[in-house]
Length: 219
Image 1 (cartoon, helix red, strand yellow):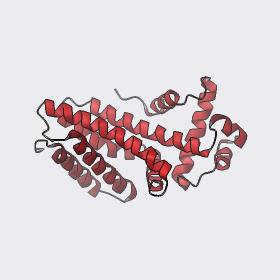
Image 2 (image 1 turned 60 degrees about the horizontal axis):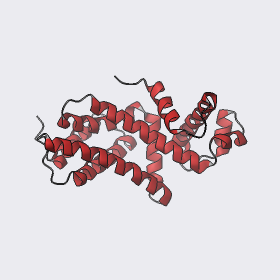
Image 3 (image 1 turned 180 degrees about the horizontal axis):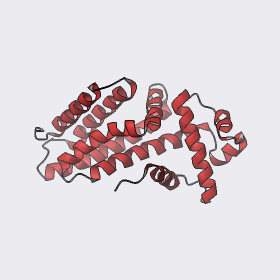
């Protein structure tokens, strides 16, 4: 059963925000984060200052620094939060499938559904990814997230091999290829004006993911 969006966002936040235990304090920190995400999506990942967030939340800059020590900590926390929500969304989709082949298909499709379902968070992710080209710290942060995704897909492929659904020789390499396909597709899907062509893109990527996994041709 899908967790309602509003409940999931705060549940995920409260699990990873460990600076304080007080519920009121956590709620205020959550509102600060939500304001920051809105501004990141609108103005760009590295164009938002603590003063901008302070104005948007009607809080002083000093108060903000009580919850997040500096802009770098806030941005780092924000992208971890967005990625974790994305992962939960994909895992939820996979959990509804009964066999490894259906799970792989559900995983690929869920990535694009997330872009539509969580448009603001997807915009934040896209803005962040662009900064990884020139910012070593952001690139390292993104690499950790990508490797976690690779491991998740590799585990699915290994289970699928055991069950006779996939035949890839190296599940880890196949997983990296599938992750790259998905990331590239999401960049296109999130930055171009797709109409019916978007459906074709997703269908093509599902087929390419099955090819990388050594799966049986899809009907």
